[in-house]
Length: 339
Image 1 (spheres, rainbow, N blue to C red):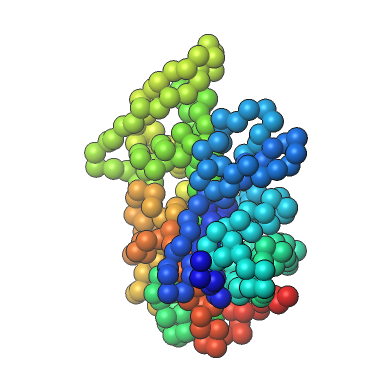
Image 2 (cartoon, rainbow, N blue to C red):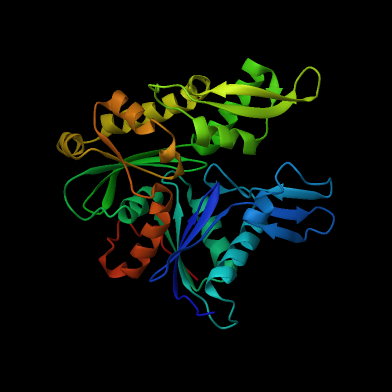
């Protein structure tokens, strides 16, 4: 395997994406690790481990080591990163790549240090950190150095990052811990309340992907959902409609829309005028939720565009930024860590 010298990593709550210059996205796998509780041995990582979620015997646990966009289990994150880096970059004893990792815009210095140290222990020569909205804008093909302001909303698994960018830096931003995972939780709670059945995370995600709705649809669609009846404890099947998903997701989506409105309120008038003219860019896996662009548009009265391949924007942006370090402003690289 040829060694990669520069690697961009989108270390997400739900998925890890790795970008290598010249190759593009070389890895996109769930942020899940399966461990043997008795021996602490790693049994599976990524997609293989995700298949085990909710289906493991008592001595095996499937762990998601990141929560709300930050590391909640340091050792497991390090082992997961080491596996993914070796899988994509090779495992030469004397070879160590430079790595750029994205972090939510609201993380603390302690959380930044945890990400840096995990990447370093996983085999990096140098680790650089970049805020997700900046990386998302670069990955979507936006020239972030121009004076015209641009607003980016990056909705991942753990966090939604909202930032106004101008002249290569963030003018104002916020990060809310409401994103894809909270959408799933809201669906699980709704199914308990409305249908009196228990469903798992994977079933909730399937409902979100197939019939999830952020804005009223012209035509209703439905999907069969299987779960466990709360009264009898037996497996049951119910038909769930897109209108129900609209109701289920209303609360977390309202929080995101309110956060967008708050950032716009804090934006300088000249830049706000730029955004009103150019529109808002939506990135991240959450951008794929049906009607989300229309909902934000309805709330802000500003046009919203979903980036091409929104899931990949952050990872592509990290790789591009690492390959053009000389062009990146010092304002963006204040989070740089070297080892």
